[in-house]
Length: 198
Image (cartoon, rainbow, N blue to C red; front, top):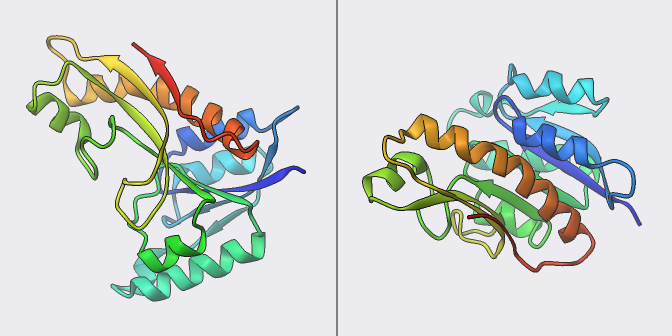
């Protein structure tokens, strides 16, 4: 049976686009909704170009009431009835109560080789640590920030002269390969991690 996928974004949605492009043909999933917490996120227009329904749950209208924001987000998602949720540059930390409702059905892509560098500024942190390699990870979402089971990683070499911007540019194409590959397998029941790159 085809799985319904909701994608959550906050910005340009390049990983969202890679997922939407892949969910065709014999893919076990189809997109049912793209949700953003930012009303003018560029990814919303891109989703519309793919004829995917969109919604906005603007976190700023809830001030600092995260529970109210998450309750509205939950309402929007339940109405769309996704089988899987993909976080694709969604820049809000979700509570344990929210993630528990989607346990085993929510994925995220993170720009580091987890468990290294959870949270923000991952490219700078890899450079500051003198790492030889960097990359990205797709993982299941749990209550632990960037701490769920790893479903795939892509590695790149860090070269002399790399900056946070050049690392981000080198990692991004691998993100666009890795996330669709993981989703395709995950939806088919295969949780074996995928490894790409060097």
